[in-house]
Length: 98
Image 1 (cartoon, helix red, strand yellow):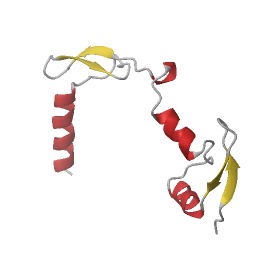
Image 2: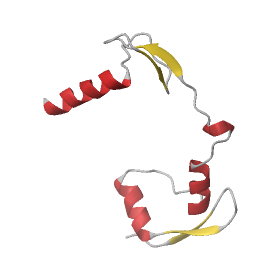
Image 3: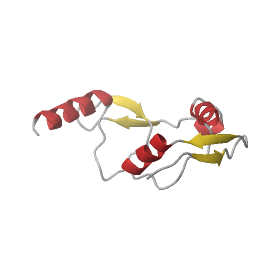
């Protein structure tokens, strides 16, 4: 069903092979687009710590225990926010009850 495809990296312009196995993986995960970067550029981009990789942290007060913590997403005011410890306990309790 799938055949290896040669694609061109949008960052470095090098050709790379989008293998049959990778295409099957993309199809199983319902990824709609083909990769646009070669393996080296994907790795370099992932490990980048430039301006696009900087992380904004938001200070919150845990809705359960009152602990002050920083989180990597902007909290919504209509939803309670938990610290990492309380979230872990909540998640473990939810998994056990299934």
